[in-house]
Length: 206
Ligand code: MN3
Image 1: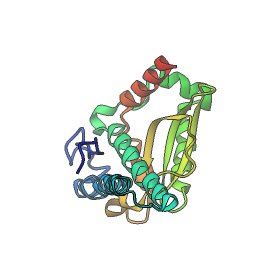
Image 2: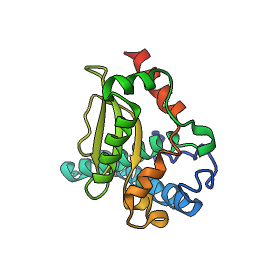
Image 3: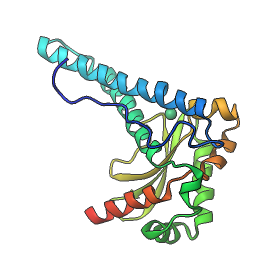
Image 4: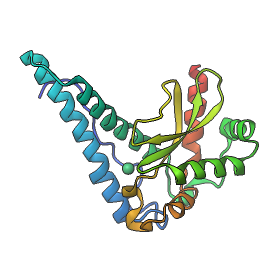
C-alpha cells in the first residue's frame, strides 16, 4: 500500500432503518455495506494495480483497465450522492423549495411534470442504471439523465443534483421485480433540502 489517498465508503447520514417503510433495513444494509462497498474496494484495487505496474514498469491493458475503473468509480460516486439525497420521510418535506423549486418550474413547467419525466426515466432505464437530475454548465438549465450501468450516457459538463438507483440490487428485497413501485416510494424519501443545497452551491460557483 502506498500513502496515496484511496476511495472510502462513506457512512450513511441516517440509521439503517430510517428509510422504512420505503426502503427496509435489510435492503439498505445490503445495498450500502455490500454493493457500494464492493465498488469502493474494486476501484481501489485497480488504483493499486496501476501503481504496481508503474513501479515495476509493467504494461497495463489500458482499454480494459480504464473501462473497469470508470464503472467502479462511477458506482462509488453515484451511491455517495444517492445516500445524501435521501432522508427519513418525516424530515423530507413534500416538495422542493428555494432555487430548486424555481428551476424545476422554469424547466419542466411544474413539479408534477418533473416527477413524471424523472419517474419514467427511472422506470425505463434498460437493465441496470440510474436516473439523475442535473444542471447543465453551458445553459444553466436542468436536464434529466438516464445513466446506464454507472457511467454510460453521462454528460461531462453536467453537475448532478439528485440520483435514483434502479439497479435490481437497490430494491429487489423490498419490491421484487416491481421497479415502478420502488420509484414511487422514492418520492417519499427525497432530501429536497440537500438537492436544493447542491443546486445553490453550483450556481454560486458558476
Ligand atoms: Mn446500487
